[in-house]
Image (cartoon, rainbow, N blue to C red; front, side, top):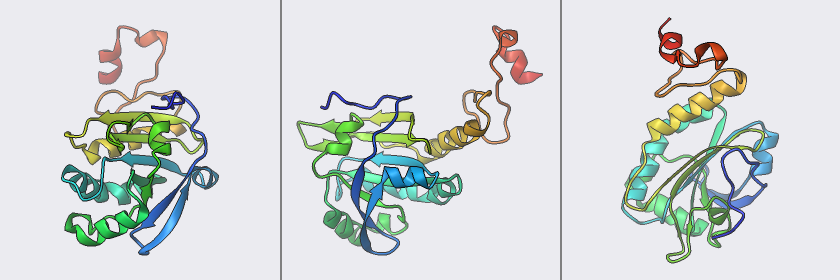
Length: 201
């Protein structure tokens, strides 16, 4: 594993990845630099491998919330160490992926997976890592699961909604299970030991 693993709160170095683009059926490239220039959030969704078992269920789940994530100004890139050619074949063959429209990133050397600390040197695969990068290029959220536990895209959407809200309200904080429209907190000496009152006033 690389020593240069990006931690939450740090700036993410610019990188590029070849992609398979399901919406066009063509190959493309994802560039973090370009995403930042366009003012987009970036969500990287690492998974172990194409043509496996839990992975297509995760990507199908992610596809369900992809339109809402795009509305929040985010681009989603699923990433594995497979090549773009394998992505094309898997998307064509696996019925669970028929609604997948987001770019499918190819990281066959493991360079990007190492950057985020999810590369498994023993298998050459990536763990189930989800990372949210702000439009300024800062890593604001990190989640990593082992191979056998799938993720919940609804929780990813909730975290993205909270981060998108907070970028416009930096003086506030989102409590547990916060959803749009619910009460936030404004940290200050007045609410130390009085969070219950602040949430229920």
